[in-house]
Image 1 (tube, rainbow, N blue to C red):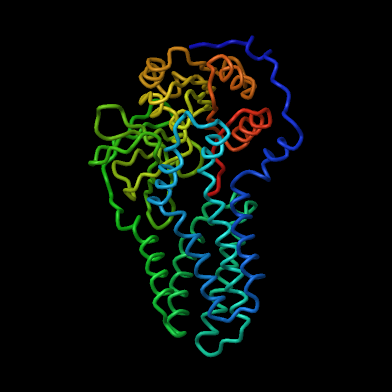
Image 2: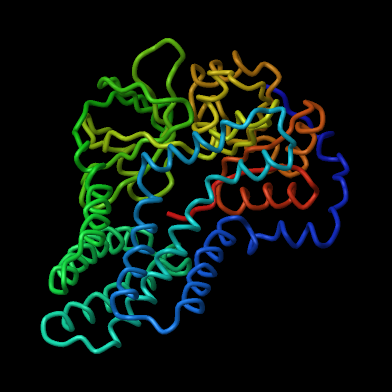
Amino acid sequence: MTTSLERQSTELPPPTSLPRRLLKHPRLMHYNRLAALVLTANLAFLWASWPHSPQAMGHAALANLALAVVVRQQYVINLFFRLATRAPTTWPLKIRWTLGKVYHFGGLHVGGALAGSAWFLALAFTGADGPQAVVSWTLVALLAVIVATALPPFRSRHHDHFEKIHRFGGWSALALFWAHTLLSTPQPVPITVLAVVTFSVALPWLRLRKVDVRLERPSRHVVLARFDHGETPFAGSSTAVSRSPLKEWHSFANVPAPGESGFRLTISRAGDWTGAFIDDLPSKVWVKGITTAGVANIETLFKKVVYVATGSGIGPCLPHLLAAEVPARLVWATRDPRATYGDALVDEILAVQPHALVWDTSRRGKPDMVRLAYEAYRDFGAEAVICISNKKLTWQVVHGLERRGIPAYGAIWDS
């Protein structure tokens, strides 16, 4: 393992021009731009076709909420990634840089949910009476709760409650949409859209199954979960796992080994659920059976990439390093890697990444990850950096590099 204090003295390049730095500000990331695009399109529709009939407002509400649901469907997500990563590496870097932001598609979800809720609120004020009025205002109240609890302050502090409200509230809202549509004059288009949305929501649950899992616990901090139930997912995808499918789900990066069936998950102690999982070592878990592309799948857009990981962030990086589809260089900072993750896993990493920089934080302390990432990017001649870490450090690395003109990617914690 390579450790080097000299790397910390590397001078970072200066930030790019002020306009470019502003465009790379976190508040202007592509996620927020997509949300703004959806809201702007709705405002344009509002202005161009005012005044609106109740029927038009109902159609607008349904179209936006259908967008919010469908873009979160796993097969749709995989399609987004497949289309975005088809661009050849001969295309200009600026274009590929933007295509790599495909994982910001959640902005479409947010924009659609906000616009759809606003349209339905306007529809409720048109004065429907009887049962339809009861359904309308019940749905407005429910949508308000879903939107309020999805805001970052609540979601980050009470994620388990957010997840339950989003799941059960979303199902209830869909049922109320059906009731509202059937209480009005049913038309083929709304019925068809609702049917598509309902199928989209139900599909992952139709793939629900309880499967065997073999667990290896190299330390009290981490467990390696091995699955072989007939699924060998593609590198970089993730699998949602649960012990109580109606309560909470947690997604982890799949680590398939080339030429072998099945896959592994690296699960680190990061909260009550993962802590109980590591302590209890269950023999069976629930999976939804639809593997989903993740941020690291954008690697194929570039000729060379640098993977920056901390702790269990090595999990999402490992399948790409093993597949070696794109030349890569690893920078991994973690506490006592062999004691924490076991000799077998560390040796497996070093076998495919002999020049990796593995920084032992228990001996060297926490490094300046932006500087380490930049030096690896410069020395390896990479075109992009992919960071898998906690929220604070991921944003520090991604925005620290992008404001200096270096394509960088990392999770955005929008779910």
